[in-house]
Amino acid sequence: MRLTDAFVKNLKFEGEKTRYFDDALPNFGVRVYKSGVSFVLLTGPTRKQTTIGRYPAISLKEARTKAITLLGTMPSDTSNISVSDALSDFISYAEGYNSPRTASDYKRLLNKHFPQGTLHKLLRSQILARLEALSNVPGERSHATTAFQVFLNWCVHNGYLDYNPIAGLRNQGKIQKRDRVLTDEEVKSVWDVLTDDRFSTIVRLMILTGQRRGEIPYMQLDGEVVSIPKEHTKNKREHVFPIGNCTVQYLVPVQFNGWSKAKLRLDEQSGVNNWVLHDLRRTYATKHAELGTPIHVIEKLLNHVSGTLSGVAGIYNRYSYMDEMKDAVQRYEDWLQSAVLRQV
Image (cartoon, rainbow, N blue to C red; front, side, top):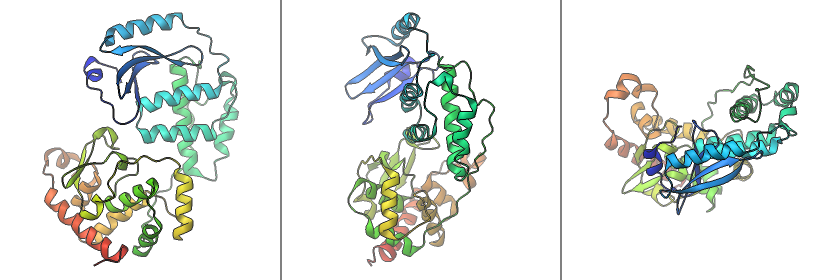
C-alpha cells in the first residue's frame, strides 16, 4: 500500500504491535504501538529498524523526506548479507503488510525449507533441491514454492538481490482438494478431550461457529451477535453473525502458537485421525445442510462471497438474513447439545 495522511491518522492499536510499509518507498513505514504511532525505516545492510519520529509530532511528508535522506547515507553493499538476516527483515515486513496468518505461514515455510548461507551466493539448483525434497508432500511443496517466490521477489525489490534465481519457476506442487467431514461421534471424541487451554478454546469455537482458525481471535461480541473486522477476514469483508448461549461461554480473546504439536496431542487423545482443523468448517456446513439450513444461510454464516450470493446477487441483495441465521444457529446448538454434549 502507499501510506496516506488519512490512513496514518486512523491507525489504532489492536492488541499487538503492527507495522505497515509504504510501497512507494521500500523499508519506510509506520509502527502502531499501544502508546501511539511511529514512523520507522529499515536501514543498513541488515535492515535494522530505525525510528524516525512519532506521529503527529512529525507528519507523514516530513517522515518520508527524512527517510529518503537517511537511505541516501546508508551503505549500499548487501553482497555479504546472510539468508537469516534477509529472512528476518522480510518477516518483519510481512507482519506489517500481510494478514497474521499469511505472515505466520511465510515464517514457518521459509525458516523450515529455504536454504541458508550468503544470500547472493545461493544457486538456483540449491533452491530447487529444497523444493524437490518436498515431492512426497505436494501441498507443502506448493506453499513453499509460493513463499520462496514472494521472498526472493521482495529481495530484488529491496536491493538485496539483482535477480530472482527461480524466476519463472512453475509451481510443481499439487494441493489435493479435501472433502473430509467428521462424523458426530468424531466431533464428540474431539470435544471430550479438549481442556481449558487456548488451543482448546479455538477448536471449540471452530466447532461452534465454523469460522476459520485465523479469524477466531478477532471475534467481538455485541449483544447476541459476533463481528469480525474486515481486516481479519479472508475476503476482507466484515462478518456479522449470531451465536447461541453455548457459544457465548467460550467467546474470549485468544491468541495461540504451536499448532502442530497441539494438533498431534489432540489426535492422540481423541483417537480421531486423518483430519485438519479446517475440516471442522466443512463439518459445520455439512451438519447445517443435514439440519435443513438453506445454502444461502450457510454461506452467510461462513461469510462466503461465492456460490449463491456471488455476482449480481451479491451486489444487490443486501438483506442480512439475521433472523434465518439465528434460527439455524439455534438448531445447530440443539444438535450439539444432544449429540456431542449429550445434554437434552
